[in-house]
Length: 115
Image 1 (cartoon, rainbow, N blue to C red):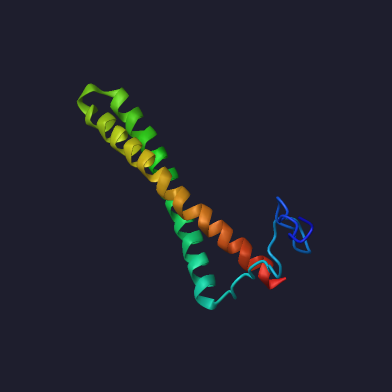
Image 2 (tube, rainbow, N blue to C red):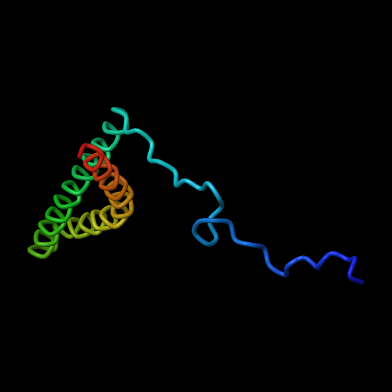
């Protein structure tokens, strides 16, 4: 039996470097920020600002509508208009988040790249 080779090890030997990281691994670099990327970041940011302003105006108008509807029973339709504005505001919140979050991240990346 001395002529037989030793059995293979029960584990795979580690490669030099950090454990679990393949040899020669390099983290990916960020892509270059183009003028188009800066433009899209500005568009998203301004779209979020405009939508937020419109939602704030809709909230104020809906409160005015509720006050008008409460003053006289002949103006009850204003209360329904206020409800329609509230539904619009509730539907606009996810859109506002979908514009504001990527816009803010893109603007931050542009600012970090300029440093």
